Image (cartoon, rainbow, N blue to C red; front, side, top):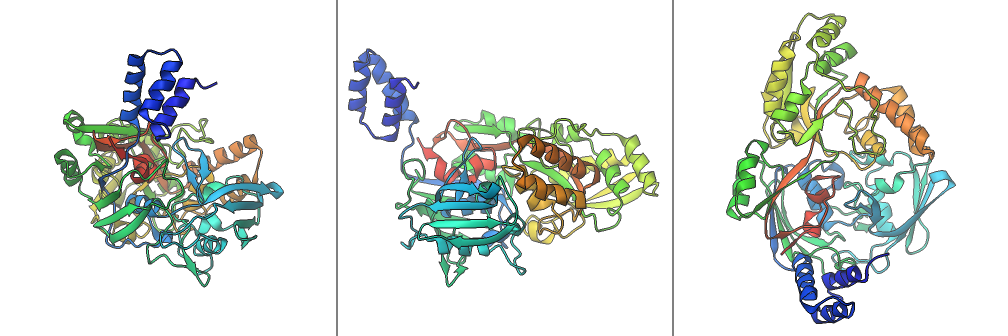
Length: 531
């Protein structure tokens, strides 16, 4: 049972009682006036306050970015979209799913039917009420033969979506999906304003906690608080925000050190000790699902050969990358995209180690004594990606594999290099549940399957596991899927990287950060405040 003092502290923190009322109530419980005053000071100092403009420097963003949520593919756009858009559901800091535009939901027919009730009197920034028709148009934006949305595979089992009255939306699936509500939290699938059955994403009108006032792709975005949002008691403490795209790590860190920026992501881990010692700066490290990878296209020679892929997987020194690229802010990966903290992480799968002899063995099995391969990388992929490619070059050389690192331009990396060239450095933020990660990037033929890997057994398991309600049976299927990616896929996942970001000490922060994306689940603008 919660102590009465805790309830009083919560009321003081949220402003539902004054300091004087708090003092009287606490003294009445037998606590001295001096002690009560000290507690009040602590609570009020830690409580979120409204006001100010936060300036955030992001190590992502490119001139080709658009407000089309289906094509967003970098951390800058995740942060921006989640700041001015509303979503049916949201991932909370503790990883649980909480209501958003949808107030509640329930399943029927073994998870084949999902019924969502919308929040009442909820409006877009222009005053238009959010309706089931807006939800339906927003979902259908990602469907259809002509859709190029990265969310298309996430909705592939959706047979029909329809309104059931003025505030209810019904989703009919072709098969059961125990995690379907998590799908609607994906950053690609906001609820946008519609007209004549089509969602209008170009205007930048959303229903989120902030309004989008200005957007210059690859440069900046300006936002202001939506004073009509339903949850202002718990979010949107800043009056406004400036979200800046600053790819260069030195420029970002200089901005933080001089006070021109209040928060930045992707700290340069090579200089992090200097940043830690700087006055007025706080460094934060959050382990999560983020992983840094090298992806081979299984449809392009020489990567069509499974033995060649295995040779490359054994030729990388994972611990060296964790030590020299992440400086210990992470753990080794095992050539699949599921993190150690996730529900169905395969803890029984043997960890692949650096083994030049095994790499050379598989190279010979592929009919080769040696091979020369180009590896595209840029800091846009992840901080230190080019250095990681050089380290990989050195370790692979001992197995007769000549890797030639190719430094690519940062701007346009995600449109011109990744998913275009056959061997590239990539970062993934991961997803809150295994089905979303596998459906986004490993199912045969999906737009973001950068490895072009196709495995019939994997595809079969993906559909079956999605509908299975028995947790132990699901676990066995997800274990097998991780093993298939590990042994057969085109993914080299040498390291899972902690999110490491910095803030000025006048930035107020919650007790715990979300770990599903960088910077508090890329919701820092609505979750943080100035002290």
